[in-house]
Image 1 (cartoon, rainbow, N blue to C red):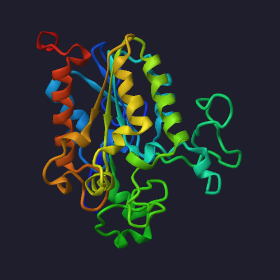
Image 2: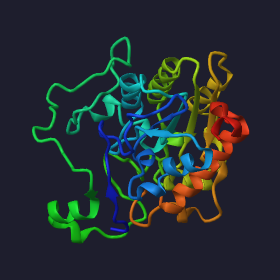
Image 3: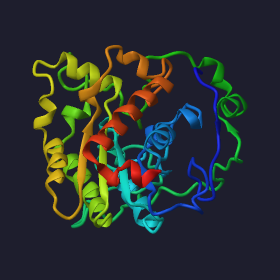
Length: 311
């Protein structure tokens, strides 16, 4: 492995400090492993760095393990009573389109998690009947070493080597489309139903947020970056329904919604922002993302960002 971290969890299982003393100035962060800060120490997570820069507490509800838009919606429904003044939502196209797609998982091993329903309302969670909760849930104490866990539980730990990108079924990171010469990227290749359901889930989160500001952060993977560079029409994904729908949220009058596309702010050496052994942000990547995010918050005056309110 290329990292060794201690992970601490609070009273609700979130990778964060206790939520018992949150104030109304808090921001809630929703997302998957990129939000949780997979592979980096707590002080190197984008959450911590954003807090340091803007002086507002960020309650991290990010969860590793292919955590899609429907799960983000359900988590927010459960915890929207936490004191907060706004939301940051990390959107990772490389698996957010597929995590809760019931059709994609019909002929695969069924994992116990919510999927978009095929009935009238896709947001009513569907669960496979033969998928059951783990009899022995994975429980860790407050100090959890990922490296030590792998060593103790996986005989093949010594076979883990440095890869450009981890290839996994759940994390469809480098599929090949029908055209064998084109790398599949969900910035470009999500089907219409996947796009529709994702937007429905994100729109419902905005509605639940009532009049609170919401910031969407679009995160490109290494594969997405490569595809965009090699595409005959770079940035043509911006004509996709999902992108136009997401941007249309900025026209809402009920609350301020902003969309930040990190693809538009890539550093010259994009390989430095990812770990060499997996597809997550390295410490450099978290610093890069947090800087872009905080600059965006300040320039758009999101979450009533004013220095006098933070002092």
